[in-house]
Image 1 (cartoon, rainbow, N blue to C red):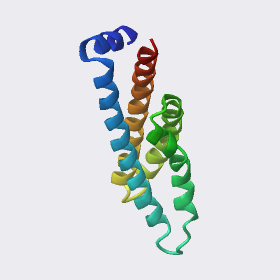
Image 2 (image 1 turned 45 degrees about the vertical axis):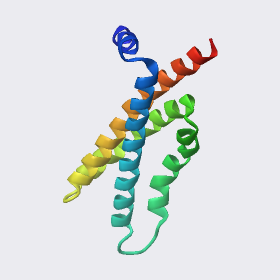
Image 3 (image 1 turned 90 degrees about the vertical axis):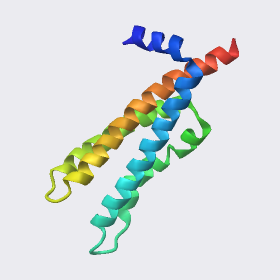
Length: 132
């Protein structure tokens, strides 16, 4: 895997791969937030209690400064947190009538994991190359 990533960096360039993985992160982050808002609104449609929605969104929103600041370490931590959302998505997928939403959450979380992992690697290399 390491050799493949290094050959990919040599072929495409670190700047191109960083930009591409950033688009991947931002797209999957947006889809995950949107899917969680839909899920949270479905949970709160009867009683109007917004606490479940906030409980789902707050961990993701805490990483927003790292995403906007393009910090590789914040992206690495977001990759770990996205695995929790994958588990939430799988649990939602087994509920009757909500399979589509659960799989959307799970797929967006896995995409976010991959994008954050790659962005963290490529951005770190980009910053290291700029220092040299």
